[in-house]
Length: 112
Image 1 (cartoon, one colour):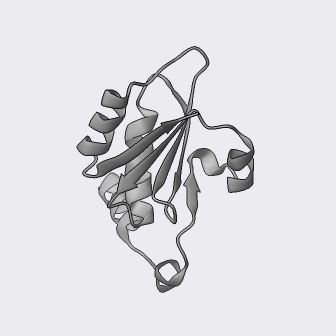
Image 2 (cartoon, rainbow, N blue to C red):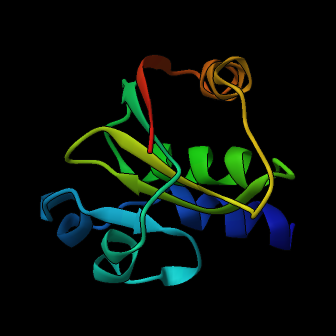
């Protein structure tokens, strides 16, 4: 029951949240300025990602990948920012599979 209430509380959006402009949602509450200073390994343009719930679901799915060190989402740009663990890789096919599994479409994958 407690898990269900917690899940429901995540789905409730307050009027202030609904009126707020989209912002970057980052794993572990890492400030956006710090993530921008980092050089992300992969930037994925995602079609259909419009809210914080979308961002949270993508973060959760990407964070389950063994090769992912950190994940960020920029709702304004429609981008998922992926930092890989040192020496690890994540193929375009794996990225597309994760995005599709989450219910979105991959528009473009850029590697840096």
